[in-house]
Length: 285
Image (cartoon, rainbow, N blue to C red; front, side, top):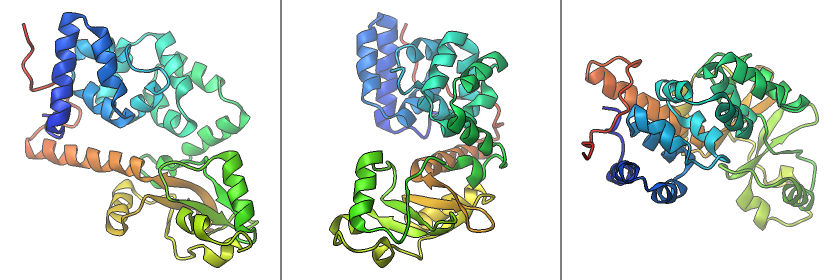
């Protein structure tokens, strides 16, 4: 069953949500949902019966609905989208960042997808279109193109000022380094940036050996690389070593989870297209 990979904690969460649904206690459900990360919310939604998913979805914070949709598996996402109205889908789509949106748009009704795409500004539309240059389940489709980058010839003082102004990227422990032509040179780790002298140059303390992968690298290879090298993120480059984007470990965890599910389903003789995301927990009458 699709529920097997959930820990005992998630089983208890799902059971409490089902019980609260039957008692009509929406406040209790909201409290449960607020404790979960988007990826965890996706697991819980997948474990709920079809009839309950849309009702629980309505209680998910609209600010994270887009990210939750992104984390849902294809079949669970499709069934939820089928149950939701246009207004709800458009609102969720507009909350997504461009990279998440590119993954979800193929599953949206055409009218909804068009409305969401039209809401993008020029830079967002360019980034959105770039995703479809690459095959599904490759680094080019998985990468985030909105990344923080610095040049090797600037001082650490300038690098710190830059990050204070534009924000420290989440899901990684470094900022990428590239030259004036856009070629990838390595990584500047936050720990080194914090402890280095303000007058030092980025080139003096950056890691020029930090691995990068090509945009056509397959998802399974990326997952293996993260596991073998204990990475939090990896740079993505083209055939000329031009920096294209970055993949964070959160994206790779989705790949690992899908692979684990696929293995379990194959062992059980089940088809990947079957919607098995209903709880093994009995419904309370």
